[in-house]
Length: 159
Image (cartoon, rainbow, N blue to C red; front, top):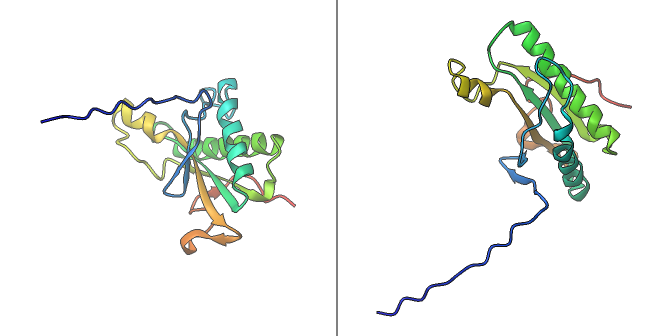
C-alpha cells in the first residue's frame, strides 16, 4: 500500500492575533496588573493594542464589555472594588489608544463568577482574569442580555 505523506509548512506569524469565540476576544496573553492595584503592567500594552486593532477592524462591534474578575481570597468588598478599578483602568487605556468610549463598557464582577476552584492556587489564578466580551453588534445587545452582563459598571458612560 502506498502512503502519501503530506508535509505542511506552518508559518508562524510574528504578530499575535486575537481570536473570537463565544462572543469573547481571546488574547494570546492575559492583561497583567500590579499586585493588589489597578495599575496595568507595561508588558500588557501589546495586548491592549490588539484589542484596539480588533475593534478598529470590526466596526460592527458596537459594545465591548471589559470584565474583570477576582478570586475569592480576602475581603469580598475589596475584591469587588479592585475588579471595578481594574476594569476602569483598561477602559481608560483603550480610550487613550483611540477607541471611542461609547463602544466600551467597564464592569467589575469581583469573585461572583468563578470558572475554577477557589480552594487551589491554580483555580484562583484562573479566576483572576480579564475578559473582553462582545455585548452588542450594530447597536443591538446579543441574546437580549443586559450590556453590563450582570456586573457592576465601573466607569460612567461617556458623553
